[in-house]
Length: 429
Ligand SMILES: [Zn+2]
Ligand SMILES: [Zn+2]
Image 1 (tube, rainbow, N blue to C red):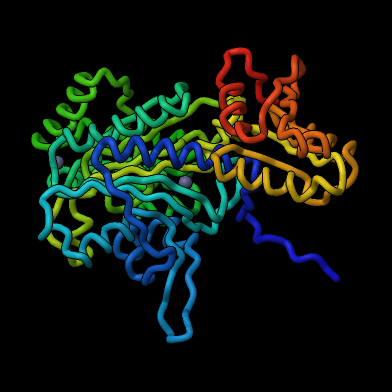
Image 2 (cartoon, helix red, strand yellow):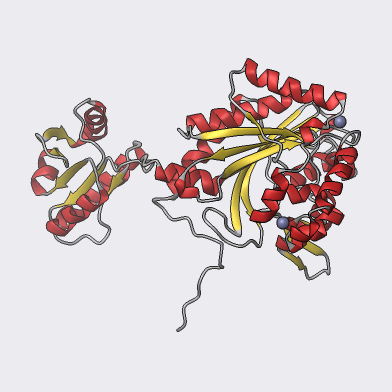
């Protein structure tokens, strides 16, 4: 029979790797909880119009990369390409503003984009994100950045730099846009085909084009932070002052556009320098989107959020060589057929007592069971035979070598726990 393969760009995450993912997810959940953020879980599929109206029709995401399909009822649905619009939709639909003036949410889960694939970039990718609704103040922006900084620190990912920018607002962005278009028109013949279109429809997008020549042209373009109106300039200055208050290092980088239409004022990116990521060095970012909720039919409420690429974070963490799989505490082997049931019962009891215990469900010779014990990397083994059954006494053997510890089967769990807690306990292999 021919083999069925997984979908290109959509990966299986197997045991051995999944522990890294769980570690990141657990760390984020715990930390975001400390900041007062509650987890929101929205469906993976939304009305296509949600993304067209929020992310923007002229963005690559909506224009080229969405998985859009018609369901059996003839509705146009899309797999979510990002998490901010679905969260905003839920925020509006559940009238959250009527319940509280400030809302802090986080989410984690898969997103889908039909992208060209490169390192750490997949068609099903995973994000951890957060959204804060109800505050237009720079403290809210900086709280978000602080949360990411603390997460990266807790994960031991220190080689990441925070880049910030301001995209202005309705008062100052149009003027900047005009100047930008004027500049870009003078170079339009050198721009890539996509940017020729962007120049007319969404000129800011040209600034974050990946094309090398476009980047060179963008480097010499007028700088947006020099075109901000007074309120936007003051807001951006206060963001920087509050980052200083927290002692968070940052770089002002006027090229941080974030590729989505809904951003206003602050945008930020966390950029890692690690060879494992190749050119895909942005591990996450976000910004302020004060107009989005209203544009989706909700109240006029300011908001700011970020998204982090879980795939890339996990890739970096794996490279760091840290160990995330908890070791097996104990392997129990039966020396003979007659001891199999007692051993089986003991395994079940020890697991109930909270130990990580393995045995060989296939039974077999003691030699083959011990081979299996080696494979599991168990820290201790215990062999159960007729003697042990009758006397209720056995030997706890450290797999890394050293003296066996005599143990009463009755006290097995507490003895293993004590042995594991000793400074001389055998290390996990
Ligand atoms: Zn381009
Ligand atoms: Zn402005």
